[in-house]
Length: 222
Length: 76
Image (cartoon, rainbow over all chains, first blue to last red; front, side, top):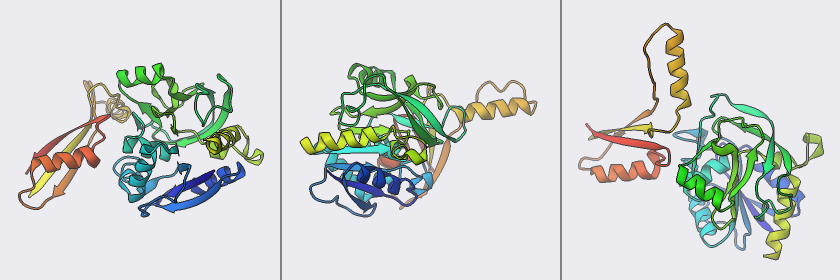
């Protein structure tokens, strides 16, 4: 699998993402926000966590207008896969590739801790290596992770089985405990918790490995 | 010309920051503050003759996230 990790000014999980993808066997290239094109023959583009452009205006809003994001949108419209984690999830909602928005945490505090998540669907390349209902532990580190959308979109996400992960104990006020959602073609996943920070036993847990390993299996077959 | 854009969370979208400010005003002894909504004001210096439609495009594309926010344009 060929993967690219986008780097914005203020990204801080880009190298973690690259390490997690490489550990799963992917060939990884870093791409800069000013690049107008993604590498040829790419299977997956990953948008990492961090504080792109200082979170100015709204988290992810400026990044979503960068040249590389135009290429990411085109990649997704061609049927390419994309993974956005934390700030990457915010960027994907700001581009319109995923529905909804991430608001300030209901408790107004920055939350940095491990949380338990329920795998809400295994029907995606990102989650098929888990079992439905599995509880996994990933770190969260965000100030704006309070997922919201209108009632109609929520009903659609539920009816189409597009909620990928939910919080077992909701830390941030997210609507319907949503921690991650899939696009309508199930090839774009955005999530606030960090699977790439849960791939090394030395860092407290390896529950994130299945996401990256599973992805590799699916995409090489695709 | 100058324009001022007011961006607010849409009605019905819970505003945790506004709620915290309301609580703090109550703690300071100000009674009767029934609700607080917090938004932002963006001032634009524009070439003369910029149309309100163009400013609306700026709002739709960048200045506001219309999933959760509404905006009001004030040409000064």
